[in-house]
Amino acid sequence: MDINKILNANRVKLNMSATNKDEAINELTDLLYADGAITNKQDFIHDVWLREAEGSTGFENHIAIPHGKSSAVKQTTLAIGRTRQDIPWETLDGSQVRCIILFAVRLEDQNTTHIRLLSQVASALADDEVIAQLLDESDPHKIIRLFSQYAETAPVTPT
Image 1: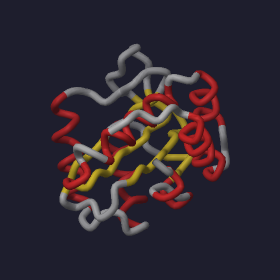
Image 2: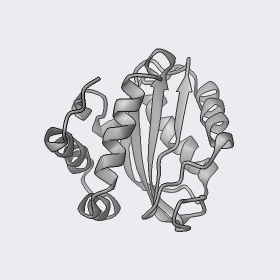
Image 3: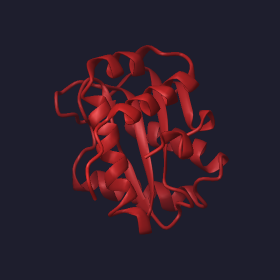
Image 4: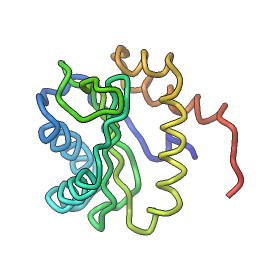
């Protein structure tokens, strides 16, 4: 999957003001709405919280990967944000979160594109170098290239 086709610099914010999970999800949702990826912020946020109720999307190494499968999503995409300070979030390793990768998934993509995209991002996040760059890089275009380059070298699995 070509990340460049679904992610652009308008959907990356590396100096978020959020101080908690709710503010972080709202701030990234604002990016998606402003860029035309979703049609209704409230509906999308509601669907993200429905998924959070099933179990926290906190990953490890200060990363969270919340996602909303929603009829409000026009284009399956990502929004990536980094907060100025660590924020509370239930994570696999007990760390607080500083980088949030919000998945916005069209309902018709929930069993196809979403799974491939989630797998690709999770594979990239298994690389300590990727984590270090996500937590430090100041250029949104380099963040996008980071995932794009990883995808180009990641093994392709048959569908």
